[in-house]
Length: 259
Image 1 (cartoon, helix red, strand yellow):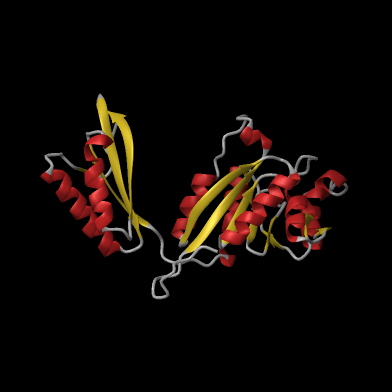
Image 2 (cartoon, rainbow, N blue to C red):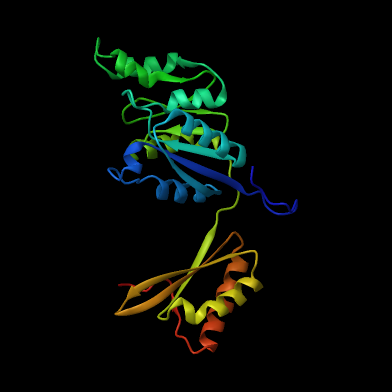
């Protein structure tokens, strides 16, 4: 699992997301979960490091989950835990962990309470299947739960349900210090400031400095974003970056430039 090599540095918790579903890869559905998950995890002190889109193929899901769970503190999956034949995430996670797939009695009880008598059909019972040893993650919207096993959290693909389940998973996720950011913007292209940015990044190697071009006000510009966990270092780097830009005769705008 990813961590800092400096024993005196704060613990950095990392995460990855496997977005599961042919509908994402075909372009039929646009993923709406990655940005929300990454932002939420950051507030909990967990840094999203990787995201993969995986087809509805068991071997592909198994390979992706096993690779990610060996590398990161937490792995999240979204999609593929509904009642239809192509919802194979639970089966695949069980295979990844080398355990049986079972009907969880608590999940059955939740679904029995949710559906009218006689309407918990065999198809709907599929949503109660989890790998043996998994714990349930509450779903206050449609009651069909997600689940967690090891460091893997299996959530629904429907954004509203995923967000509710993520809150239910909160108590099982440890975190460190959140990543903070500072943004300054300039109305010049990246090529004009590339060397300047490289110098500032070298002086603040413990921070991330990214440049993001945009087209506004009839011209090209760059949003310069500093990210890190130490507020004092961020403030110092922002001041250094601003000073270097102004010394080069470039007007600096705090934050994003509005359209």
